[in-house]
Image 1 (cartoon, helix red, strand yellow):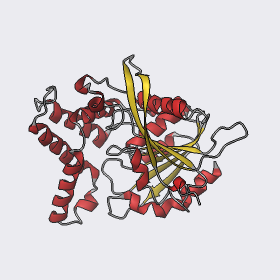
Image 2: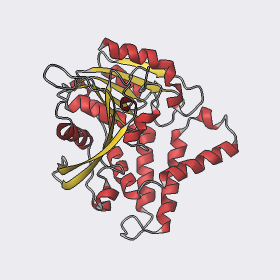
Image 3: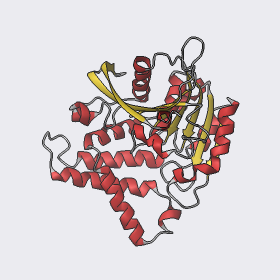
Length: 328
């Protein structure tokens, strides 16, 4: 029995150059990606069952491994029937970003089209026998990219699953980006080429701000102060693996992200999944309006009770997701 299809493989690729929408060109741009599953081919040798995965704000290509309730043996996206490709996004560590390129604060601001084109160029160069994706799954920040794909390349996929995400930066998302950038820019160290310990303190402050917006009032008022203190510390520990320049340019993107006026371009089947108990992506302001704006889209609500980890509850909607994919 071939067990390789059950394990996520990681590879790196380098573009000879990647051109941003604003004309800026980066030479030898690194792309970090992984793939898992079983590719299936048509009579012309083209892969017909490829699904692209787009990760969250704190994630990378390996985040797909956290979706064991959907992407694994005997699940909705089982390893025998689907071939998943997961890409660490432009601007994030491991792929081409301010920190890994060495450009730091000189790294160009990217737009949603750049994030999409970064992935599209990888598929063109490394998977030329994928003429059309079966689908795209976008989680959190990755939902922005998945939605961007369906708008800028509407004929390139049959379906998009937009999970716990939005179609524009507003409310808490905009506030977070604005205040986090204020903290970073006022630190006095952001434009320095020499690392200073105060940078770590800035990152911790940004993580505390992110913490406030990441958990619902229901959750933080049910748990003890000791549990809150521990989770705040874990948040801070996680963000210290990031570079302040990567976070800053991502915030710059969030301040202008808005696809609302382009949603009529979508042709594929769209499944929008809202998640309860979240102060960052709020179904009433993010998922439900998107569903209402895209004719023919479907909507699911995932009730996580008061638990902040929505991935632990995916089993609740696994059959609904499977029915959606099978209906495409």
